[in-house]
Image 1 (cartoon, helix red, strand yellow):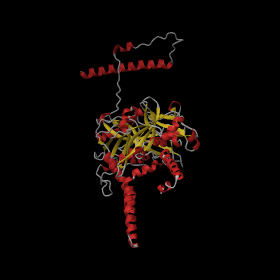
Image 2 (image 1 turned 90 degrees about the vertical axis):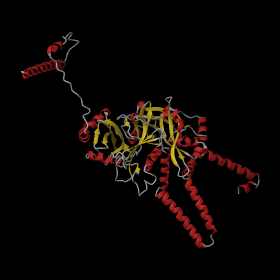
Image 3 (image 1 turned 45 degrees about the vertical axis):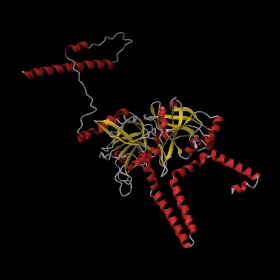
Image 4 (image 1 turned 30 degrees about the vertical axis):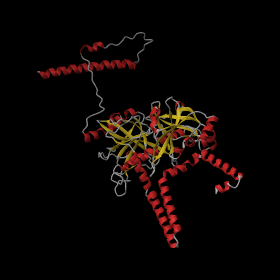
Length: 582
């Protein structure tokens, strides 16, 4: 048709050329808008081709049939095929089943024999930090979703103070001009002064058009990346020169039969205001510096860091249900099948980003940030902890897991924790207080490495969907083996281990036959003989300048009396010993 129109004359040729140029320009400049459609085709390429082939040959046979009955039969066959494909693939989730199995086969899995220790425990849950951040900004500002990252050697919650999406004009005109950087280990997070970093990003998550983070990153993709990559979580951190940067985690889709997501590297967006030159670059080839997964080791600030998309790590952890074989998760087996437990009242589901120390595990893993999962059996009534999963948060191609079930440890899992906490404090109004984010707390206490869960009590207003953060939240530690709840002093983390021991030591001693720990020896020093003569009281000189208070004099007198009494006791003891010798 286009060829015939082209041959009609010069005017028609000019129209075809102009329209073609406009279409090409639209395809180039608007690729961030239609890229989701390309990704959809990429994700379901095998299913789309299968349906296309069946439909093509089915309609071909349909047209060849002479009788109406045979044509109706062919249509019925096609309807049954596509209906069965929908039921098995989507309703019974066979497509996701095969996708997860591909992830399992692609994983570099390591079964560890020793649990790592936790360190730098974070006090506040993510949603509390988010709500407290929003409480600290004005009407025209929003706070992006917090992420736990390493900044200047410390674990901190970072989030952008960005123009609100409520008012369209702010996202069109303003920049992101500040970043919150709040310590994760303090019970008193501060959202002012030194924790409010002035830094300008002309590209942000809430900004519009080419200044939006998603749009700018997609525009930066080459044609191959355009159909295989997608932007995911956005992190704010310092680079190796101390400059704040925006790090966008990328997801790469791999495979032809049932494609699956994997870590695809990161896109780095520098801070600073953009001029006319940057605007042209932004709308043509986008903004950002792409760093592939294999090159991230060349950037120290990206190693042992949190840059992995949670969408990827969740699927990797879930794929461990195939450890018992391809058919084990099917309904008639389920012997070792596991799931990621999602708690109804917890607004931040697993993974929980946690700082682990792998030094004594002897497996060569780095100590730093990991995505942690506590997998449980698939049944709703089963809440035991089956696997502890540690996914390196910097995207390192490896997954560590600890098999609790095979060792028959009988630990309670995350989904059992809320009821334990509620049962321990019946006086709480649990309709507006929710125990949330039960992250691991692993310590060497009383001669053993023990696994606990650290949970926070978050308040929620009636009729609200967001938790209200408290500066000093209630914290509970639950022993996953003994199921006991220890309410700890949030203000003194250094004493948590002793608080745990004080509550559970008798149970541990009776059950495990352990000795005494955290014992403070009291030494009594007796003064005998002429040592009393060595104690003198300095004369009171210059009374006007060196006046001793009555309390100070009384303390000195009491000290002398105690020494005299001690001397008398020692003499009496020696006399009794001599008499007993006679």
